Each structure stands twice: as structure tokens, then as C-alpha cells.
Length: 162
Image (cartoon, rainbow, N blue to C red; front, side, top):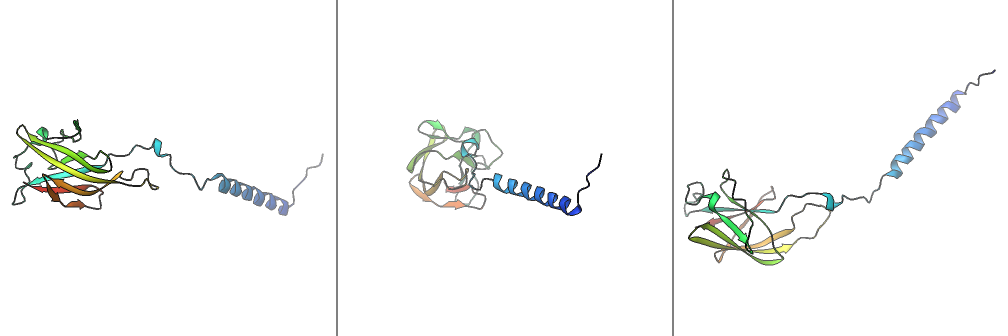
């Protein structure tokens, strides 16, 4: 019985062909048009922070003029704020509604209710699954236009002087 010994060039060629085959398999198995299925992605809710201050700029939650636990913000009789977090100095509301004018009631206590109106513009879905659904075009608090403070953190904020 004779053993066949492969010539070094043939061995080298087999290695190169195997490597080429694996490389081609790797390249063509990738789908360049694949996108994340946004239906499977859980995104954080779009938020707006409301800071209540007096004329001197003192935070009215920090100085206990208002209690964050007692403040309720609602839209269409549905609560849209997180009232359980007393570690913040701001009211945190979840943006909801439709494109255009959206009215929110801000119940500060048993005897004081304010009105917040947000003019929302629907954002295009784009390529990012979790881009904010709306751009807040305008904010009005008790019929006074309020500047929308946009920072790099993507959280929008308004500062209301009471």
C-alpha cells in the first residue's frame, strides 16, 4: 500500500481555496439591507420636565410650596405624570397626544389647577427605532408662552415662573 504525499503547492492551494470559500460565505451571508425590527424594540417614553419656580428662581417643589407626591398631570382624564418620585425637583410628564394642540391639566393641589398646552409635530420614523415621536413646537402654561429648553440629553424642559 502506497501512501500518497501531497505536493506542498497543492496543499497550499487547498488552504487558499478553503480560506477564499469561507470568506465568500461570510461576505454573502450578511444582508446589507437588514434593519432592526422596531416592533421588537422597547423604547423609553418621551418625557417633558416641568420646573416650577418663583420670581427669584427658587424651585417651588424644593421649598415645599408644592408637594410632588400630590401633583397630578392629566390629559383626557388619564394621568400622564410620575407622582411617586420625590427625589426630583421637577414634574415629569409622559408626552402623549396627537399632532397639533394638546391640553394637559396640572393639578398642583386641591385648590390650584393650571393648564399646559403643547403644540406637537409628529416626527418621521427615520432609521432610529427609538427617536422621539414628537417635536414640541410650542408650550403654553396658563396662556403664557414658555421657552422649551432642549439639551443634549434629549430631555426637554420648561421653566414656569409662578
